[in-house]
Length: 302
Image (cartoon, rainbow, N blue to C red; front, side):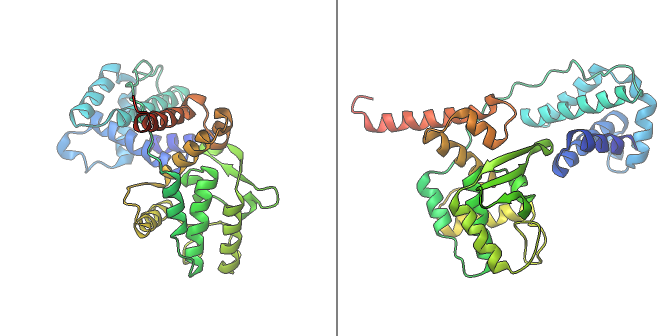
């Protein structure tokens, strides 16, 4: 099946996460259904048959076909961010078809990406972070795991997928560094604070199991990404914060607090594993918004 072969190529060449690969596969299959299937038959078509039928007419697909598909997504109310991801997936898919000799040129090559509005990421105040961490009870190894995990989030700014994939061999307790495998399996070293490392030591001592994954569930298997989000939701409620946050909020919070404390933007970029400095610069907007808010509140003639 050409779609599966495409996904395997992405995995081998780009090192994308399983979540990203699933998203790309779903996006491509939806496009194939749009091109080949009447709406009534949409859910009845076998994907292997879909792939073979598509290859028969792949060379006939035009830029207008893709634009028509995207216009239908717009009519369905899909966001610009979703459109951008769909275009990215189609560009990669048609490039793959060109490279493997199935078509001569990509009809998606000149399709422009929608201009995305930059959103200011949500983050917690220092008091909220302390309230979150200080309200985590440590009556069991599971509680201690939660404390260690969220201390690590705030100490390192790691992505939830990176926390999920962290292994004990990646932690240098003496040098206070953690080896992180980020997007595309790119490796980087991240400094970790004493509180986080001490919390991990205590948790592992109470765990009394020799598990390679750092954070495990009650069955001693690697803790899932969705489980991490659910645990955070529970901890936020217990702390009485009254805010709706995600694990990514803790990453934003780390970066914003580092910048507020005078950290160099380039250094924050390296720690976060951003490929481009422009991605990190969003946090300068967060800090500036805070400065303006403080000024407006405090200055008598603001």
